[in-house]
Image 1 (cartoon, rainbow, N blue to C red):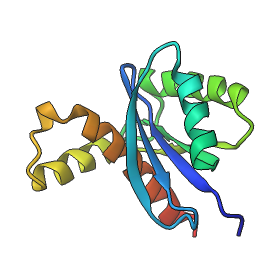
Image 2 (image 1 turned 90 degrees about the vertical axis):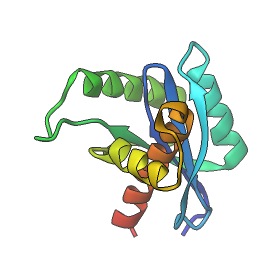
Image 3 (image 1 turned 45 degrees about the vertical axis):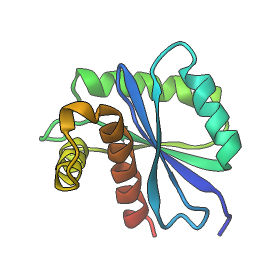
Image 4 (image 1 turned 180 degrees about the vertical axis):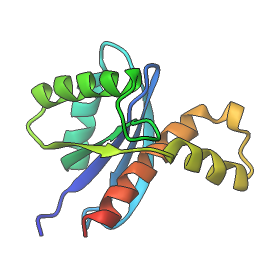
Length: 137
């Protein structure tokens, strides 16, 4: 197996949660939250280079029935822009329930959800990535 890290992305209109795997692609850990601004693609490219990322898993927010929503369309548009700006694969991954899971996990750890939006975004990204890793061993 080629040793590279995989990046998980929880895309949001204001903030983007980032998670990365270890080089063996076993563990997903929250990495950081970056602002969704005009420099977003540059910031992602910088992380790709710095952390030796070989693949991106982008959370796809389908509704409970598995259908596209307005948010899904926004993520698909972002995925196309991302694919044009990088040379590694971008995989769309069903992210239903990850934000709920992230909220529940953080509440169990004593975080105030209203004060922890940045933490939620990167934890949600790590849950998307973890789900991908577990389903692609």
